[in-house]
Length: 334
Image 1 (tube, rainbow, N blue to C red):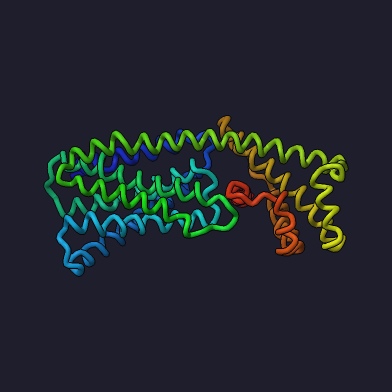
Image 2 (image 1 turned 30 degrees about the horizontal axis):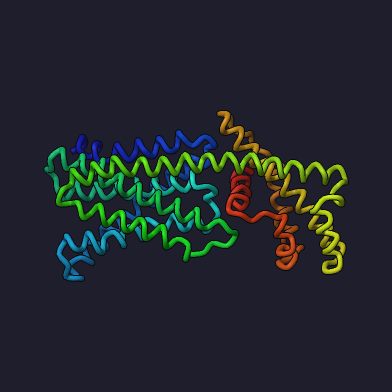
């Protein structure tokens, strides 16, 4: 029984490992990946419990249920943890969205195959090949696609639930289409092997190029802002001119806090991007004891400036998902 079970989980595990190794910037620590796998496993256990009760309650035959109901329920349960990560700005790029999504799908497939092993204790090896190269990769692939689409659409500082619907619909449709091929499982498995890995890898590599572009542009922007502020030349820049225009709206002490916040965020932005560049080169940055007081000072300044002041600084205090994510990156290494 161990050999068939290994066949059923090995492909999805190897593909997850490949995503982790291909991530040049090591955006996700191993602990976070394991937590995502565990979250997917919990979703798989809950899905099994609900499915065995819901299918007879709805009075549907197993074929209709697996096509119409099971994909919606299972993709919804897998999406919960991914949505939580997106809301907490734990996902900065489509690259780590793909890894998180596939990790959740891996955990889900792992538990589903355990239950399948108990239900069918003496299946043929072809059954487990189908489950390993077909069903398991399907679960990982649909969750990865959901995560990538949702991350791409939710780029602003405020998470919007409506923007996860396109990714959810795509995941459900792909899942349902796979289940329709259960009458020809080998055909379904062949389609999954030929289609899903290539879709995920294409989007993964495309996103990694975008990450590299963001990293270079953002590093240069932060460095230039920090240089002019330290040199006392900020008054001649667009930032300085903008802050001068705010003097009629905000008291002098708030303007000073705004200047300090811009400088501090530029310093932290350079630090975060430097950490990613070191990871790409194969090195890990040493813990920096100065990060904690700097992050605390950022929160203190933002509180002093207030919501109205922060809205006024929006053109220069970047609040894209990547910028919010890099603050979480530092917060986890302080």
